[in-house]
Length: 307
Ligand code: NAD
Image (cartoon, rainbow, N blue to C red):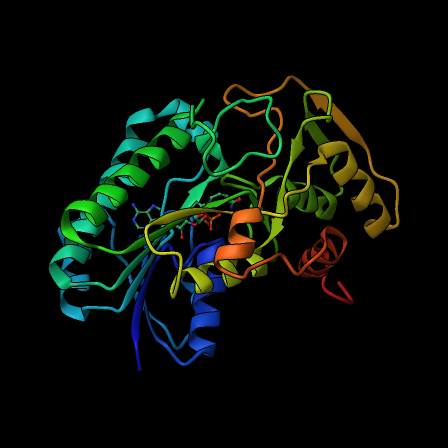
């Protein structure tokens, strides 16, 4: 049975990945400091190590286990938090990645798969973006992820650690909390559940590429076996405005709700849509879940039948 390590496996995307890896019969070890994740999210068959990816102890776990693959998802993933505390993103997202890479090099880990972000690109008029387009992050979060990508590339080049970087669009689905990077769907669901108004930053015409978490997991699994030393978008390639999201939520909810507007946030990208042409060809991956289906499943999680 192959052993894999999932950092951030107690978080939103990581917990879905852990579940799928367990279902595939893998021996799964999770490294997570539970800063935003929770032990309850970790599949009971996985081994949870409550450790910080910046620490020597995290390195020692990898050295001891000598896993086949490390899926690195642990991160400070809140854009606004990165503006408030730039150094923290550098330490966790860049420094933590470097710490893990060093462990992988020493342990002879076969493959390092990294969860990166559309946030590396910053504001651009080009839509959809290709992987070859220039990165110019406008948040410290995007910058720290871009920096981590380069450490990964160099560890491949200089030390032979194989890697794949996946730049996720806005991920949504069951288990997402209202914190973190792409949380607008979960923030709105939570407000609906509480019967509170939904607050829209700016005019609501800003667009995002919303990709369902189960599709993201299938891309991570594909990257475990292919796409060596390359960068891929994990996205739908479709731009959806926040106003369109509100309209879909109205259909799903079946009842009226109030929306309020406030100014756009610093560091927020106006439009974000990623081409998925490359990953479709190279990893034979494409999104399988439509926005309507994904929202339905997410809604069911927030409003279980009978609640
Ligand atoms: P999340 O906050 O739910 O998960 C992150 C996990 O990492 C949490 O369980 C947290 O406890 C853990 N963690 C944070 N700092 C840590 C540290 N120093 N040491 C050990 N563990 C630590 O976020 P998520 O939405 O599941 O995101 C997972 C990954 O995907 C992140 O790397 C994020 O940058 C990336 N990503 C997410 C999105 C999105 O839309 N959610 C989009 C692009 C990229």
